[in-house]
Image (cartoon, rainbow, N blue to C red; front, side, top):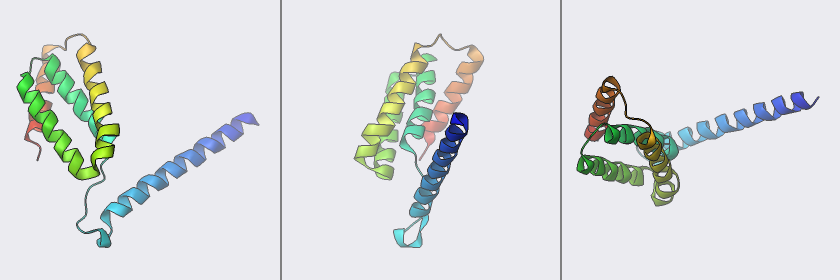
Length: 126
C-alpha cells in the first residue's frame, strides 16, 4: 500500500509541475502582456551556458572572451527575468556548471572542437 501512495504522490507532483510550466508559458504569451516572450528558466539557462563556458575555458578559450560572454548572458537574463531570479537562480547554476566543467580532466581534441564551436555560437547570440 505504501508504494501505491508513493506513486500517487509522484503523479500528483508531476501534474502540478506540468500545470505550473503551462501556466507560466501562457502568462508570457497572453495578448494582454504585450509582445510574446519565450519562456526562460534561469537555472536551466545558467547550467547550459555554464557547461559551454566551462568547457571552452578548459579548452583554452581566452579569459577576456569568456568574461564578455558572461556579461552579455547576465544582461540578457536580467532583461528576461529580473535581478532576483538572475542572481538567485541563473548565476548560481552557471557558477556550479562552470566549476564542475573546469574541475574535470582536460577534454579530448574532438570534444574541445565541439566545445569551442558551442562557445562561438553562444558568443554570437543576440
